Length: 432
Image 1 (spheres, one colour):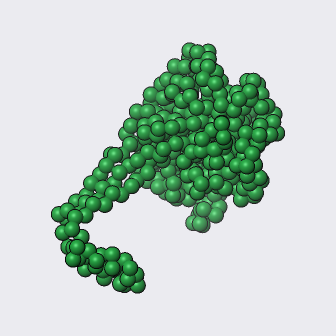
Image 2: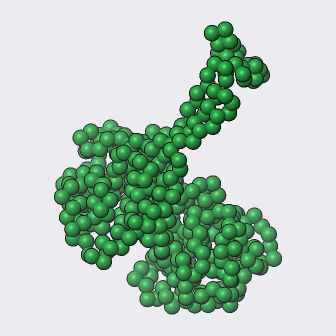
Image 3: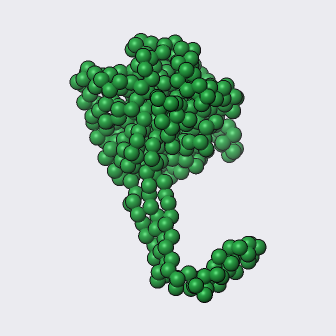
């Protein structure tokens, strides 16, 4: 069911050997280009055409009526409503800690002041997938940090669902209402990203930034339109890596691998262990648990793909090296001193410490973000957070004395770069 990769006694470039899902975004860009161009040129008519073609339903209106949002919230199962409320509370509490000071100020010399102002993005479009699993949780993971960041205008788009009369999934609508978001669109795929980027007359105004996960066509549209809009990341298939030693519980480890594998046939599930007995036990548990799983076919495909493996290592030291090379979206630590191991990890979207901190907790209610870098992007990028929705602007204020105090240095620097106009902009002020 799952491949084995043995790197014991070796020290290769682990980036070249760790399992990874193939994702040809550039090919998908050419597929979505005409879709995005059509939305830019034909607006609502193109949205209707692509809704019929890709979602097999055209909603009565692309903007979901406010009463639909309120009705979805009113009809929520009380237990689910309680789960939503607590998840929102916890994510908001963590988001408040993520927010930086609005202004920081450095006085570099008398009269020489540089401030950094953190300014929220003016308008954002948040995409919420609705494919194999309608990810209502992505609503709160996008909306809450945007609200805490101070974004003034928030729009949400999610694919229309034939089973729900052409509207997005009721849980998605309900969460939008609970969060106070009333601008919600029944538009999915690349056409939703194009709608946000270009705007559609009488439907949706353009946005400054688009965030949220999606399928490869959503990712491709974000790549194509980046520059016209800001984007958070190019999210690929979800992935989990687990570092485990012989103290780990194989039942827990197998369950956590399965929890991510059920997202998508291309999802990655990787166990990194120095214990062959644990590897055998986990393999047996995978067979037992998958046999009873609702999405057994999807899980089996994901676990059997080239993106998933049990990686055998010499020791925890090598396990850390492999994990850092892989840079997993989600990394669990199931070792004797899990906190110490976690503290040595440099590359991961989010780190889950110990057997009682499964990824599923982070997907919903831990308080952390679940919009995380995939495909090795955790080497350089962070998960979605309050800072993702704010931009830093430097404000420079020098008085005459402060400028003249450093004028010689600036003039010399400009001369060294053969930019006499730059030098002169300083020189002309000497006698002013």
